Length: 334
Ligand code: KG4
Ligand code: ZN
Image: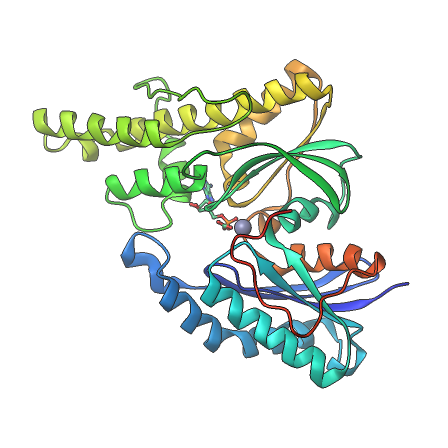
């Protein structure tokens, strides 16, 4: 079975469409919404409207670039959740209409599973079982991956996601949204040991980022009282130190999980896996603990339909389809 599938991603602020054929992603078109930049976060209503505008041209471009006609499609896949309801509704309604019009099956994909399955788009691919640290703007999880569609969350955040911790801290530094990549950029030229921020201890493999967020807020408030140019004069050092602490919070639990489950195949996924500090630290840990570390191509780290297509491929092979009466699930679990 070598299905040709159109996949659509619309869970947050990226409208994306991809075509997969014989398990190979042929085309992955992503329209990033710049409309949120001045708001310090994604505005759900604006995201839904932008998806409405983008979805048809993005799908047309994905089809055109891959040389696939609509009539060649064996299935249509969409992100069922988790995500913003209004945003998910745009992708799911479009996918349902197309599946009905072409009389082909519909596939509903879990966005977080798809982030993990992005590892199967290109080589090298991890072998089962592996651990995946999934770090995005909405989630922070350690997942034990036993098979393509057999995964278990073994640790997760009790409050904010690490991407949110990056973005909210960036906002306090007056950086535009999303601030994660900017913190990463300034961190490259800073002293990572200039300042220290606390980790919050929670249940074994779980995370909590609310403590470091508050500590960072008070730290800036106190320093700004003494010197109103503190941020401007120390931006690189602040970013490098914060990034070191956030990355350590992640990798500390990952080391624990690797020891607990005796697994040395370690992957990262989600938007924050683009972070250069995290990538560097994982390279060090790979040497220290003899891990095989897998990091997806940059294109497949942040939200994209290529990963939805990859997940859809395995769901198609498993015969796991969605009825046309389905609706999105903003809090979808595995
Ligand atoms: O997976 P993703 O594209 O969307 C969600 O599903 O949330 O992740 C977006 C998150 C944002 O919080 C963004 O700031 C963060 O990933 N991010 C980064 C970097 N690139 C993206 N955070 C730190 N360093 C980066 N280089
Ligand atoms: Zn995501």
